[in-house]
Image (cartoon, rainbow, N blue to C red; front, side):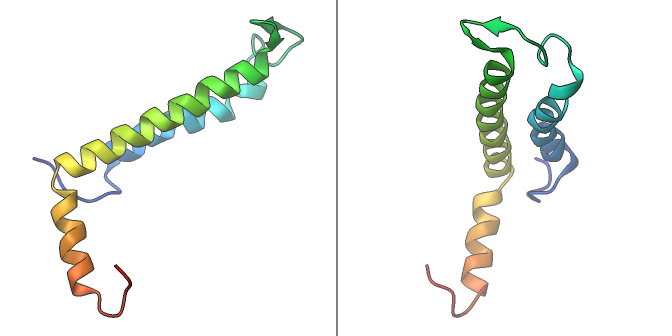
Length: 86
């Protein structure tokens, strides 16, 4: 079991993959050009792929966090915080 800290290097690396995909868009000639993929502009398809990739990456981060004991940590933190709506 690893650390139930949300900002672990492994989780940040997983979340960084789609961000790098989005940021690389203007530098990739096969994406940033007058090309059509499936009848739509390649940039639109590329962006849609990375939107789906973002959802997958965030789900992987959440699953990893919960597997490492994040639910218990969140419950303990919520119990220690007075005056918050639950």
